Amino acid sequence: MALGQKIFLDPRLSADGKTSCASCHIPGSAFGDAKPVAIGHDGLAGTRNTPSLTATIASGRTTFFWDGRRDKLEDAVMDPFSNPVEMGLHDRAAVASKVASLSDYSKWIASGEPTEKLDQQISAALAAYLRGLPMTPTRFERFTRGEANAIDEREKLGMRLFAGKGQCGTCHKLPDARLTDDLFHRSGVSMDDIALALPALTQSVLDRNLSGNALGDRVATHANEAQLGHFAVSHRVADLETFATPSLREVRLTAPYMHDGSVRTLDDAVDREVYYRGLDTGYPIGLTAQERADLKAFLETL
Ligand code: HEC
Ligand code: HEC
Image (cartoon, rainbow, N blue to C red):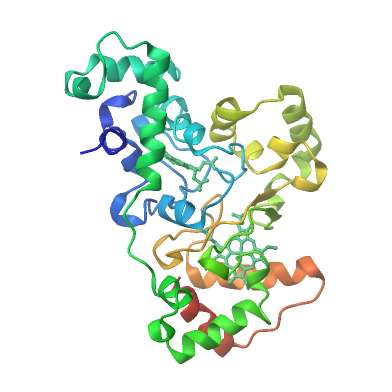
């Protein structure tokens, strides 16, 4: 087993000794979980839905986390260790000291290796493990690589609706099966919950001025601030309540949906997106029940 994979699967690197990366990014479930929001060490709940890491890696996304607070995978993979509701270690340095203290890691660690060097080694190994995850091409990926029959006629109808009338392809880009545009958009999900609190919440974010893992720790423990999305990173009003466009790879396996996991089924997610994206542009997207069913059939090939 490679170092990155061993660390990914190792529950000893957490506050309760029972939580590993794989507790939430479950290899058999597209490296996500089936929960609305993540549950970390000692049963503590976070505020956001666990993303599928195979979807993230396959799409080649250029930012990480729903709010885009990290732009290097090497940084993103280290944040969960010290997140207070994920793995709960005291700080980032605790990861390297813990690894150094476990004898079964000795074959990867030079004796007397300084902690900072080991820290870099761990972050590089985790990032390399994720970049190298074996992935069976999805039917849509086979189709984009030239296998015309990998999706059937009805699914092709759905694809045309996705790219055309449904306008989904504006953000979930079809070329190279990336299914994202690397941008942040307002989704309308759970926005009403914080409407009255917005002035105080935005001020609090500006006053604290957090970034990187400190911002991650904060939003994982403050549901209302988590709703502000990319604003907490950019501090631009136009980014209020916007979230990264998720790749829809294997979306049939990744319920529940959206940044807060508040949408239970794929049908509900499609209905929401059709309604809200229409509202966004000012032109309602009229799709018949049959067209919605075809669109969903296409989503199931992704
Ligand atoms: C308690 C559940 C939990 C654990 C444990 C966990 N994660 Fe995550 N992971 C999440 C959640 C939730 C998010 C999204 C957080 C956000 O957007 O603010 C996430 C996001 C990520 C992302 C960014 C993905 C994207 O699509 O933007 C990466 C990379 C990642 N985790 C890697 C790891 C690694 C590596 C570990 C172990 C060191 C780990 N995670 C442990 C729940 C977890
Ligand atoms: C303006 C850009 C944009 C358009 C157009 C768009 N989406 Fe999305 N989509 C997003 C964003 C951003 C999210 C995440 C929103 C959130 O979590 O709050 C999302 C989330 C989703 C999800 C949930 C994915 C998950 O992993 O939770 C599905 C399913 C989805 N979109 C399907 C569609 C369909 C079908 C269409 C066309 C009818 C569409 N989208 C049009 C940007 C867009």
